[in-house]
Length: 134
Image (cartoon, rainbow, N blue to C red; front, side, top):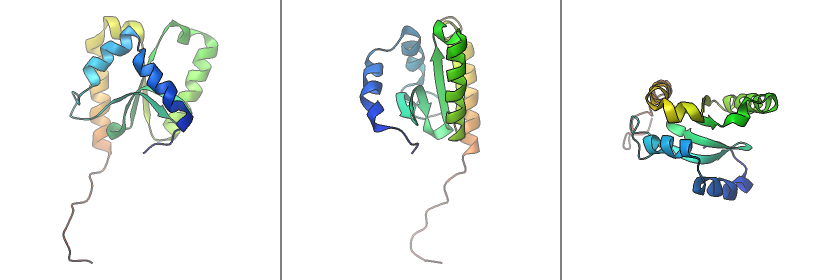
């Protein structure tokens, strides 16, 4: 389980209730294990942040950016945020809202490939054996 600040939970809950159109559209494609049977979470607290979408099985974060993210100060804070999330072993994908709304198939191809790669990088659990000891 990734670390997070518990104080962020009510804020995340509020964000889940007020998703943007782009977030709602992407969520409709991520929810209910539609991609390789893996679970995605929306508006998930991780570290000091609330990420838009998170897939633990693939160590993947997806962020959707509105136009304000193109401003220099937002780009700097986004880069720092990505660096911290990557230091936790997470891969961060960023799309702008327009891409999701107008190029959803292309966005989903990138997401699918990232999930596929992330799931393949996670070593399988050792088989469970009954009794026997060492």
